[in-house]
Length: 206
Image 1 (tube, rainbow, N blue to C red):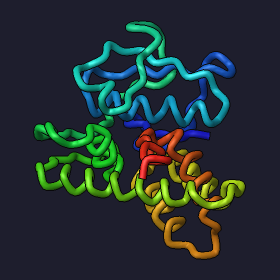
Image 2: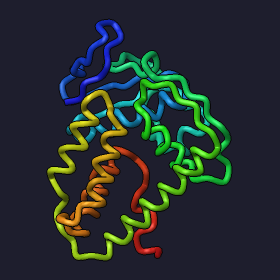
Image 3: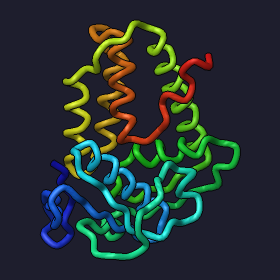
């Protein structure tokens, strides 16, 4: 289950919802924090928890794949804000906003981050390359997802949202010739349900 950094103890602690089967996630009114909160909700959903968001959306949050919150105030099991690193974004006009999400996921959420336009342009190119790769895999016969890669990536995410390590698992999957393309496709879809990068956007369009 998900473990997050507790600034009070400076250690990772398992998230234990007060209500069984429901996790309530509150976020500061800051874009990076809300991307992190969205990631927590998606990961909780994978663990079969009903995930409720509690925040007032900030501009551009929806563009970065942050799904609407159910409430604007209320008691929460997880508060996202204090432990999120500082972020100095630059304008991303002309780029896919989800490339900004990818650029954020490439660095651990607790680390301070200052993106340049070149960083976001590189992330945009990487996202397009991933979508092309996934679209190519979609042309192969269907196969079940690779459970070992899924388990590995989810374990990284469960350990204080280690998104860089989860993305590394996805990259290794892409290069693993022992995994059939159809299985790579299903694995990418399964992990993208948490990562929220819309990796299937180009399927059937190339």
